[in-house]
Image (cartoon, rainbow, N blue to C red; front, side, top):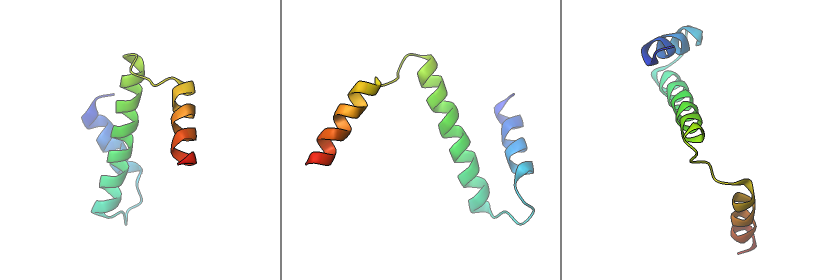
Length: 61
C-alpha cells in the first residue's frame, strides 16, 4: 500500500468527529511504526540483552 493510500485509510478509519490533532497523532504513530519496521529489516535493531543492560543501569542510578 502506498503512503498516500495508507494515510487515506487511516483518516477514513477515524470517527467523524476526529480533530486535526487526532489525525496527526494517528498518522505520526503509524509512520513511526513503519520506520521502526524498516530499520529492523535493515538490521538496525538493538539486541535485547543490550536494552536490558541499559535499563538496569538507568534504573539503578
